Image (tube, rainbow, N blue to C red; front, side, top):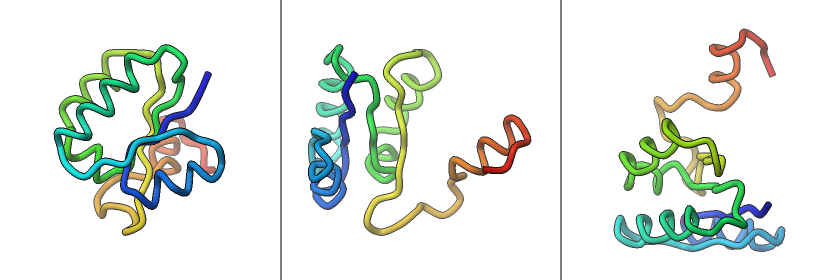
Length: 101
């Protein structure tokens, strides 16, 4: 099982330094193509996508997250930081099961 990152150049470069393959995208079309390509690759078990890129293709990501089990889709902040109003992982875990991380 491999990781794959979709995001801005800095995010992809950073993960690349840790050995994670990825694609840098600049617009909605590139984001959709990269996301669909990653979904088609059966070797990819976790897709890491920056929040801003996930917003560009929101319905596509949300449809997949809420209807499929595999691969795992993880949204992360990019170099500009977290998008205000978005719950972070700790908040989601706490609200779901009541455990603070």
